[in-house]
Length: 351
Image 1 (tube, rainbow, N blue to C red):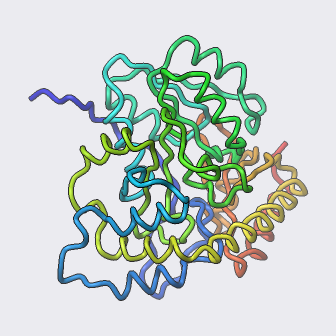
Image 2: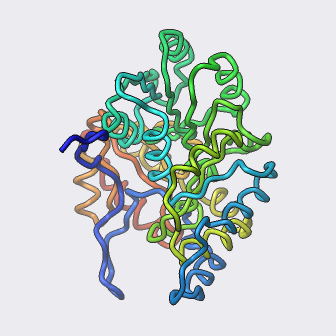
């Protein structure tokens, strides 16, 4: 049997093992979510939804809610069951064997995996230092030609944010490249980061948004793409029906209206990340500046040492960053336990 898509092993991701109902597990900072926890409005809507009938075949209420949130013209929003699914949809819809797929690294492991599935040639441009913007290297790579360019904004795992006007200029300078801007964590970044802050994206850009993270509901897969109407129509045209189940759809619509929870979670996340950065520095680690609800730090041995203290963090070896870890902003009630675990690193090697 001949397959057009080329199967690839799953990439490694964050998120600790499931905990039995009522059980107490470790503090999981390996997945970056709203530190306030689930949006009460979204959670209530998910619990109240009707499970005895089909949800909307086109998730139209999510489309309408996202269109209102970002003040978009009609026809720009494509509902998807999570940002990772949206990235996959972009890859399989736009990449062909032999195409060049460029990415700003280090980055989400699904970028390379999905390019390989499509038979594309994957290339990464990495900045130095990790939180910088690789302006010259990226421009040079784009001039050599790329069908698709993937940019995380903020970047993952470094947490670096690029102002949206800079991305708009990049899109304008390279009209032959489709730019997929992964804004999974943009709700936690400073104003002016999202490409949607100034209206619709450029004609050659697709924005990927995650609701899972900003609403603190990783058990419900929900998100959407935003593109010019012509591109959005193509992406919608290859979608299966019922892209979101009823609980996810209800939570997404209610959560899109719960802006206070997201804004408050973003502000809290910045404060908590600053506390983590200070503790890591005091313990001899080297944290990177972050504009997101997580931070990257060079801290050899920290993943194992923190796990032993009941704190799970993301070991970044799979990003090509040995001796680095990524820590999400904890829940406020977990902060002191996390800081105490970080302080225990002071006797190890973290220089």
